[in-house]
Amino acid sequence: MNWGIIFHSFFIKMRELLQTLWGWFLILCSFIVNFIGDYKVSVVAVIIAVALDAFWGIWAAVKQGKYARSELMRDTISKIAAYGSAILITIMIERVKDWESMFVTCLIAVLICATELWSISGNILIVNPNAVFFKLLRPALKGEIARKLGIEEEKVDEVLDNGVKQQSKNTNDHAKTE
Image 1 (cartoon, rainbow, N blue to C red):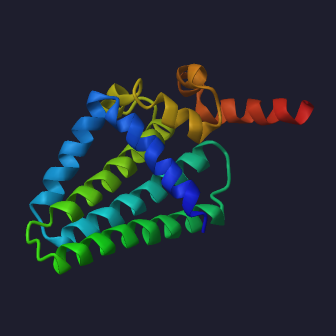
Image 2: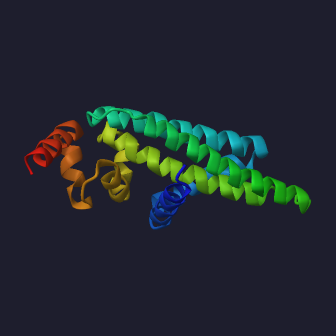
Image 3: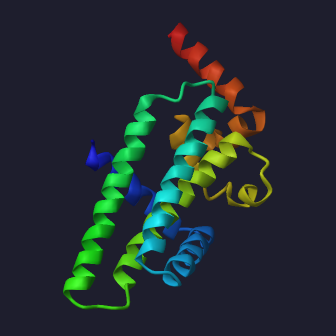
């Protein structure tokens, strides 16, 4: 497991989330869902978010004409382990300190869910660039989509508008000729 990559990716997505109104909106929605429940809700929300990110990640890879590699499964398991560890530690701290509010655990779960929702949104736009709600997020998600497609941010709109698979094929053909 490469913990550094997981945490680096987490902080990149957090930075992007906090720079946009849509990112703050996702954080608020995640907070509301996690705050009204108990520890189980936080844990289940994180597991569901990671599973949905894996699902949409596989679909986006297929749309690009790439194989869904076993690396994706390793990354998913690594994320669940890393996120689960963070949540477990905060639960233990709250119980040792006898804090009944669950605020810290809720906050950690909110941040994790928000970064996963950010990633899911990018994958959904790769799969379906015209998805109504997600199309509104498209300008804010350019960095995320560019990283997922391995292209420059300036080319995201062109690639999504012309079809991801076709662009991916052209990129691969271009790479073979060099």
